[in-house]
Length: 359
Image (tube, rainbow, N blue to C red):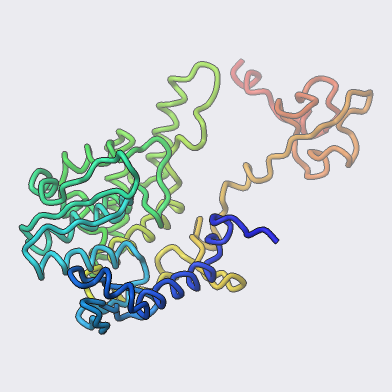
């Protein structure tokens, strides 16, 4: 029987957990490997246990000083890299190819007041090595807000905004380095976090004024519609509604709080169910909330918009086979009948033509 592909196997969380456990267990028990590879180097293994295991010169012991209950690998990588930089004066090289890891290293390198050399090297060939120290020195003014800006504009746990790239986000952050001081602050009222986040994302859409994201959404739509001769702008090019945006901000706020605590033993005690997630019992996982319970994804008029497909005939759109008649709605220009003269839908024929009112 042929083996499944690596991709297929690793899409199952239980498989990944078992594989990591097997690899870490073998590394910790392989005496020949210890003798050959740990006489000079130290190997720290982080598996399912909160306390990593260190192997050096054949000795295996627990590194209780590096214990962490963080679940995300990104946080653990950053925590261990920062600890290594504190404990030894030489250069630290982090092998990773992940933007979340990069912004974590930048933030905590500056926040911990480090001065030693640190580099981030991609495991992918022909990609550049990033000098963390030089990056912090060059962009120190925006580093305090970098985690928040990255989380809000899209990361592993927060969706992005169509057409808003990281270049735009950095441009806005450079112009106003203190524009996201609330996001990721444990004591900040959520209403202020949302207000500040709204202003930041509105700036990314080149909109300054607006009471909430729905108003910004309308203004962006109006500007785009005015510049389009033949059709309305694509839906994905618009900002989210205020209700959907608030849920996104909650997730970004939670993620930023966790990132800021990456070097600590425990993540902050925050309930994900209060920050844009809901429980999915069957899969035992968390799912993102699109909009709060009781809030429709679209107005009732839009949700009930139905296009009929009635064929031509003397009694077109006159029976309950017509989806518009069945739902007590007038036919429209989007229907197959085009709401024309041969449409027999009584509601269509009672709709007043706007031009009649203007005469």
